[in-house]
Image 1: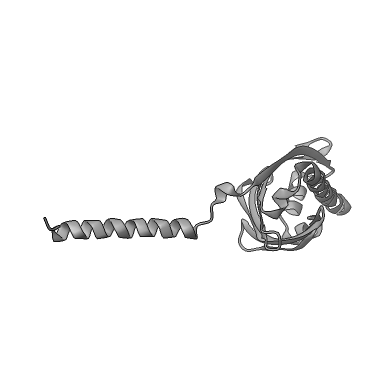
Image 2: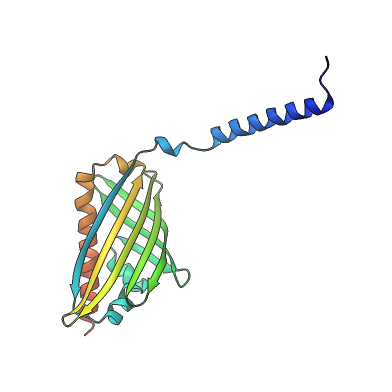
Length: 187
């Protein structure tokens, strides 16, 4: 029995669909095989300033460029989005990150939630960061309470968290010390 024209068309369509799926499988990298690591940080820093003063400081891209360790540039693209270029030494590597950060939730001058992503082409490392800062005020000034989740993959993921955690924590501490100096030095 000879297949009908409709049966041939259906068979051809199925073959084309299979070929397309196979092509997509070859073209799409398998992210499930890539090693990812995560670091989490949280703490509070007391700063002798009002919430408004502190908010102005942490939302100014020029000040951030001076305060973020390794920042080469932080440029405002829109009210809530920034591009970032940062170079840092991480263990035996130098990582040059290019990416963007976005304020995904904010209530000035009370809190801000930022999502950032950056890529280092030399090590093939991706970084995704979710950070939240809440500014609480009392009689002694402002307290900046923060949490941060850093997820990373690529070459940097081969570095042990025991090695990487103190490096990142040192940079976080330096950032807040720089913010503190910036705000308290303005008086």
